[in-house]
Image (cartoon, rainbow, N blue to C red; front, side):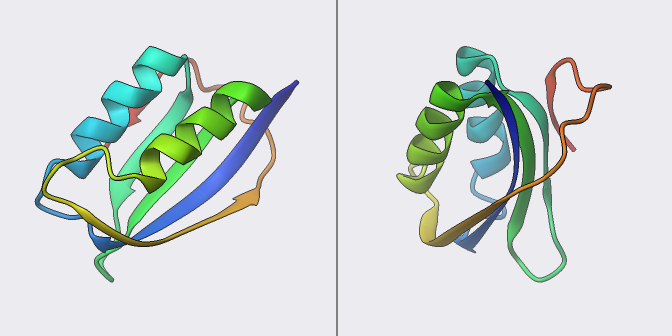
Length: 91
């Protein structure tokens, strides 16, 4: 079943390769969506995938895909599916 999530990651996640590492994980898992930095220092992810892939994605993000990042919190909530997404982009 295809699901979509809005994920907010807080900690030391900007300027440490976190978006690039997140994109690599998304590409390996077949995740569609976008990741970008927010002005408050967090990283915002909107992603959609099959539920098993999404669980794996969130788990890997929570363990910090970048060796220089530090994750303080990962919050996610369901959002509507975006029919126009066909790949994952780091913005």
